[in-house]
Image (cartoon, helix red, strand yellow):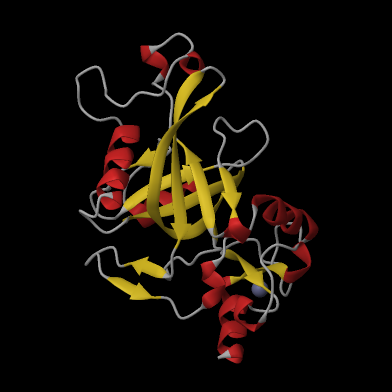
Length: 235
Ligand SMILES: [Zn+2]
């Protein structure tokens, strides 16, 4: 399988194969064979209030509730920083690493972001830097918020080496509403050949040539083959 690229459409299984772990929870601090991974969803009725800012460059991600087995109504109590055993929760781990970055002790944590756009359909949104974390009041309780900034770095999973992406189109996250509109318009198929597997959200006019990520008119679904053909013809 070719290396996964931002904008790629994948199944939950493919996502787990990419990370070499069964991804069950939304926040995953420093996976064994990779960097940190978060799963997001901006769909209506999604459990957390994640949002995208600054033309797709910034993601504000909400921390996660106590597990259902530890509280009758998880949404009614403050988000936990510690587990009952006194170790850091995922909230606590991400929060502490953001604090360490802000105090100058480490580089920003690199976080890969996957987004669920429909049941069984996920999109890889790229690598982000965790640059800030804070606590705010929401519905009479305290929640953690994490600010993630999209980066042109990519993470080599085996060597944890960072390389620069050549393709500037990967520097913008396509908003969820645009992804959903394009998916519906193109009927979940490559616009060139009609294939329904290995799909990718493609910028028709590349971002580097002035194209936008924010309008469905400039985004289309392409299969891997037609995406690579197009990229080769541009370069
Ligand atoms: Zn195709």
